Amino acid sequence: MIIQQVGMAGTLESSDITISIEPNGTKGIEIELKSTVENQFGNQIRKVILETLQGMGIEHAYVRANDKGALDCAIKARVMTAVSRVVDGDCRPWEAE
Image 1 (cartoon, one colour):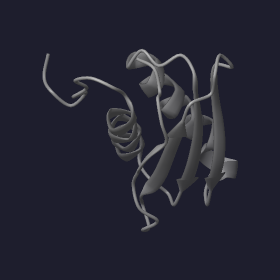
Image 2 (cartoon, rainbow, N blue to C red):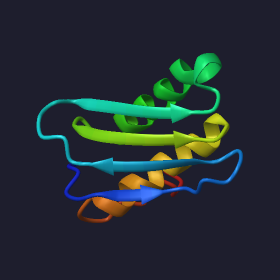
Image 3 (cartoon, rainbow, N blue to C red):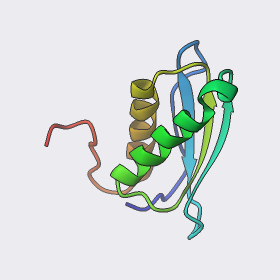
């Protein structure tokens, strides 16, 4: 899948995360993270974002994440929702296979 435009998912509520995703040319996946728990969980948050994008077939994207202590499942859901909002075509990552 190719990121065509800017999309966003999530809120700034406690225990949530906002994910903004946009095109990044051919520079791979870059993640800009701001988190209230970055010292403790920054690497894990980046890992969840990266693995979710790779699992969806995204190779190039610029991601801005503003975390307020979200669990891994919330991070994954926000990434999948943001991607589904910016790609062309039928993208329903939440459907059972």
